[in-house]
Length: 129
Image (cartoon, one colour):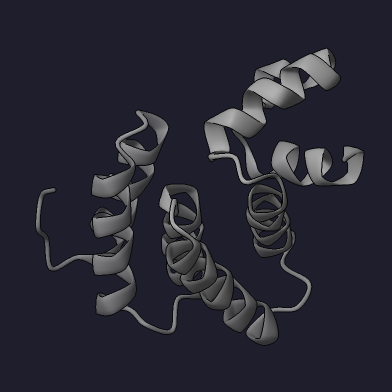
């Protein structure tokens, strides 16, 4: 990813990478933004959310869930964090990667197909199981 000393530019890069499914680069950019401006909860949360989306092994899932839970203690009403943690818990319960949940959700709730990769949809899936 492109390195910049400006946290806003790093966060914008993170968003661009995320929107183009370049998640490792998105994680790196959000982590850089969060390092440059550690009090910006949004960038720390976005890094944690990308980390959750990339998690595959049990230890990675546990680490991502721990990061999201820590952030939720600081911001307990954050819908963004609540939904990402719910999606991560759904993945742990079903033992499927995020993409697998998307496919399953499309079968169970076709009206949600357009947003199947979003945290909100993953949380909806958790409610459907």
